[in-house]
Image 1 (cartoon, rainbow, N blue to C red):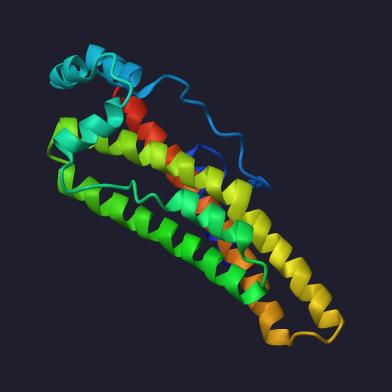
Image 2 (cartoon, helix red, strand yellow; image 1 turned 180 degrees about the horizontal axis):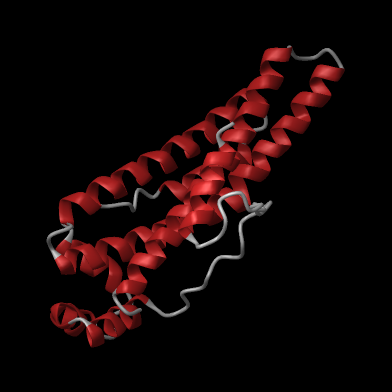
Length: 212
């Protein structure tokens, strides 16, 4: 009941008949790349935005350009929690389903918290052009790290946990509640991955407005 009105509005926005059939994709398209280094991206943005020239000069050729820029222009903000590696290691050694589910849940909650922090920071720094650029580049790189974590570790481990729970339930070694918990966590991990991919693309669009 909710899809039809949304489809009609979208059709009108792109100049099609409201009743035209709208075929939704079944999966996300491949992400658009941003292959340049952080220092090169800062330089490219500075070529088109005089406000960033001082930043580009300070960070020229530096390997840790983005981290240094964060320290200089975003002193109260950090997405570098060192969490990605710890989640991967934890999920790699936790063999029992309840412990693995807790680690997966922690990874999901951390990703959601970082998305909330990013949104709040955009509001905080929206009037500072240099800080806003540094923030969005930082958020973009963090989204990429989180997407890799979810694709390579969290979602596969959640899928494996469901399969183990199904086998255990079939053999009467666990109850139906544990199976439901595993399935629920798999759905939530996939949903969070989708949110991260959406946020990455939205941030990329913001960076493109700066000319990168």
